[in-house]
Image (cartoon, rainbow, N blue to C red; front, side, top):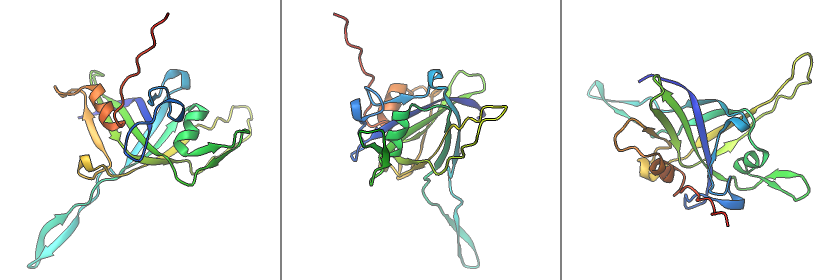
Length: 202
């Protein structure tokens, strides 16, 4: 089925047990960061290694089987203007308390979902990665001239395997399926995520 556009990306930090990290150490009060117009959204997400070509197995002078490997995709994402604290946390850059940041010895685990839409915009595809690491390999800073030389947040995500998904690094959700519930998907991918309930005004 054809699809169009990039509607949202969803990010969360997860701990060693795969549980979402919320609050001060997480990306938000409930742990989930969703791309949005205020932060100028996500420009692109190029997903590669969705599947691997099989290895041909030969016997009796012919090809008798194909050995398939698991899928551990990478996502080359471009966010137009990630909040500094969100970007620092998903890259594992720790503050020294004086404005300086250095990469941690152990990189954080990140869950990521990329959402696209069907051609009629009635349903969504969700490319979900429950565990992986994010890195920023380069920055190309240039002087402004007659035009503003803006540098966006170009990050690469490497997925890890998930035992619940036959050891693969990706699970694809389709909102047009009868049994689909977005809250169930988020809870599965984002380590038990639940929507935070606003406090009642006294």
